[in-house]
Length: 318
Image (tube, rainbow, N blue to C red; front, side, top):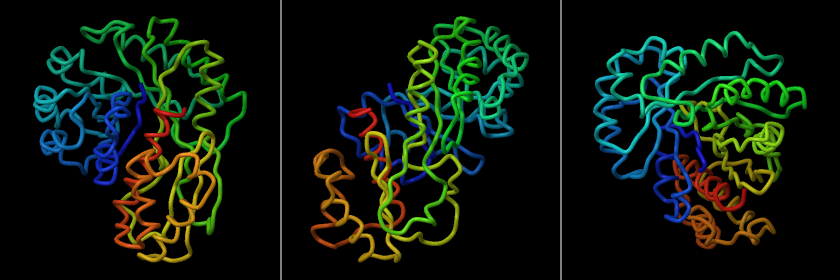
């Protein structure tokens, strides 16, 4: 099972709603929510976006207790889990924890563990998890989030392994590891460039070192540091996931002609030939834009296409 971390935005929603059914069944989206999202609208939206099981990530929201009545309704109305942080678990209302223990999962940010493991910190977290009502080690889903990366050293992999090993030794086995290697900005790219999928490589090396099959997660075709609220229309660009790289095609202009131009460059490439227009909804869209130079869509559409191809690639090729 693949656990992509996706923002609850229109582009991401469009990406998953256009996944092929045979691909979607191997995926559990983790919806990254912020204080700005209206949780009351999630129930209705999920009925059209994603009807299978998914996880709502509340771990980045400060005053989560204020949202619990809405979250209570959300859990009762949908096939959904809720992800919180260890700090939230420590302070969350006891009744909610007792009533929904089986629906809870935990996101642990481990970006600060690259230079050494804070054993005391993690033993404290493990004690909290052990006390979680209704959960045992082989039932509780834990996400280890390493955040944004570019490259990494072997010492980092060892430190991360030492950290995760504490949880394995405590009996926790359903463990997800996530990071995101896509750059936060494409400003330095004009033309075609290839960027290594270091998040995939890190997961593979960590899994091998631990000797345990960590579940796979990433941030799709965008960086964990990307700010979707940034103003302005970006230069026409296209992000295309390959086995070990992303192919980035970026024009020096904006608008319909530039968007269709980058699509044309893609469909004439050897990389696209390997996949073909039937590989995903996004590939079909790019082929159409290259053929017709018509209605390429705006930023929301481009975000959806990048994620849709990436998600399809992970479940079929990785």
